[in-house]
Length: 128
Image (cartoon, rainbow, N blue to C red; front, side, top):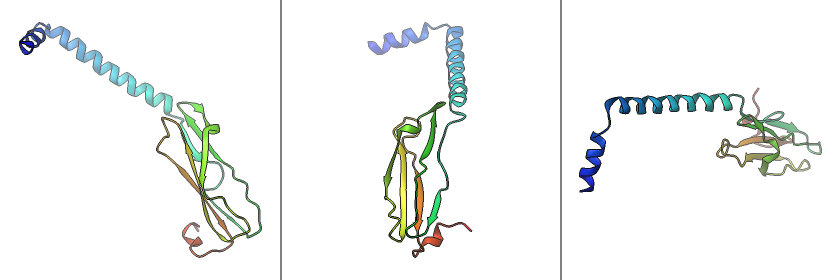
């Protein structure tokens, strides 16, 4: 019985009503796509400074952090760092991982590689 009443209700729609509903749906989708692209056109999640940093053992390293724009707002203060903590007194390759808790950048991460001294495998990170 419910199927029959639903079928009767669907038949009562005038073809113009159905056309207008589809037209407004298409217009809403197009406006949403345009607005989304407009709001996010300048968004970025990038490292400040170099992606690969090479320093000598005993040198100094200051993390420059990352810049994040989400939907036109600067949310760089929300950036969290993880991974390794570079020990400037111990030769090695360290990776600092940057993430941000945001709907736009939730699954993204950026990685800075810090090479201290001349460890084995360092040439894989250095672009010459």
